[in-house]
Length: 96
Image 1 (cartoon, rainbow, N blue to C red):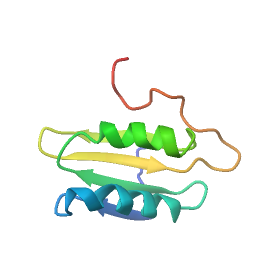
Image 2 (cartoon, helix red, strand yellow; image 1 turned 135 degrees about the horizontal axis):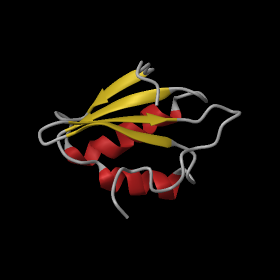
Image 3 (cartoon, rainbow, N blue to C red; image 1 turned 135 degrees about the vertical axis):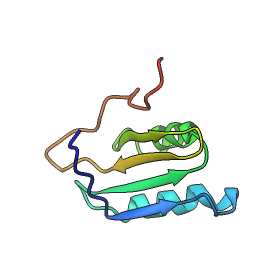
Image 4 (cartoon, one colour; image 1 turned 30 degrees about the horizontal axis):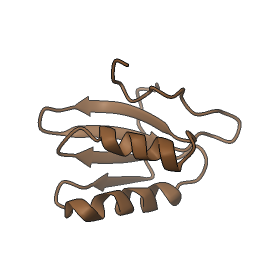
């Protein structure tokens, strides 16, 4: 991944009520154009969100951990450029 991070928006959900977090994140993701990305800032590992993206976005997203806790997690979530494909499933950074 490129060392220069360009994001269309930053979604910091640490102060958002938990039930409102995923709708906010998906709404921000839906507003992205191909090749754009958002920065998600969270207070815990958003791995369940990764699985929801797999289910709802049909794998058409990229997921790159930039910071992995213990207090703050930052994840770059992007829409692949029209001429590129998304990262293979398993790009969540876990060891499966």
